[in-house]
Image: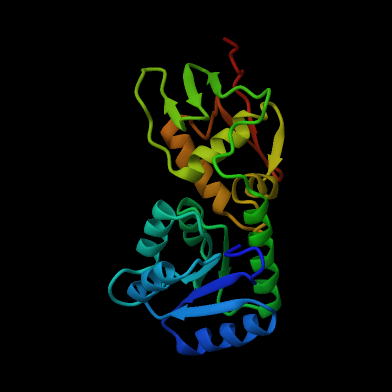
Length: 245
């Protein structure tokens, strides 16, 4: 939180003044300090002017830097909590939200009480999260399987051919979540909770899209997978044996 004795400060970034006014009135009544910005330039000015605890960012900003660009830059330069707001609901947009490092995602039109619950949940997780948290005590920081080497601390993945494979943040988190729980079936909800710290909408397909991307980078044939098996109607299971040093 910005200050120990101060209410959380939320920055709403949306070009629609009605959304900004609605959220400002509603969140202020709920005890938050609220600022708003209609575009990226105003967002950066607000972030520099005072400590911000949470940014609610509309992905579909017109002109200049769009919301996707702003979210990517924001996550690269800051650890501020981020909720993405958009009118889109397709899986591909949710995957983009995950890969950009958003803490949560909500679509328009939204229920104000649902948004409030998500804001409080994100801020609770942020307050509980230790900076630069290391791999838990007793857990190996390097995983080896089927010739692959995964360094959890350095966030590197090296192929059996010795080449480093580039993964997005959430592709890496997804692989780590599965590989650290070998031979265990994880539901989509469990995976989302592990890598995104939340449950997304029922029938959300973003994990399926991420699995497809990850399999391609691992050369794991979905028709005959060696590493990540689909458990029909349930979720996914990491089937490769971990090799000890």
